[in-house]
Length: 87
Ligand SMILES: [Zn+2]
Image (cartoon, rainbow, N blue to C red; front, side):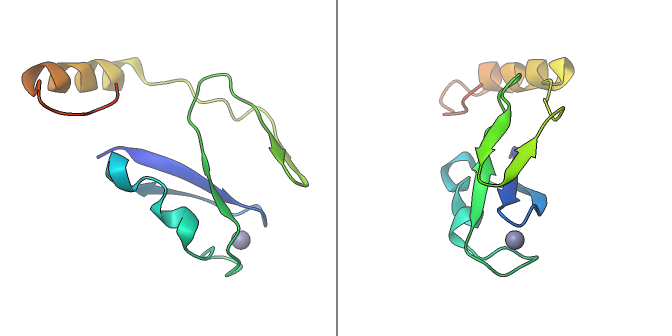
């Protein structure tokens, strides 16, 4: 299962492992830090700048996909052609 990044309006960031189908689940739950229902999922797109979160600008947090990990996922996908993994 892949990890997904989440961020709350209070600035609290966390990472959770979820099935792709359940990847937005933590956004339906209160923030573990401030208990507000303001958690959003960060989309892990290389080069994407998260500057549209109200009051918060996060710069320099670009994630480069780990190439070895990506290759590993592709290999897994080859081994399991029926999987719906989005690689
Ligand atoms: Zn919070």
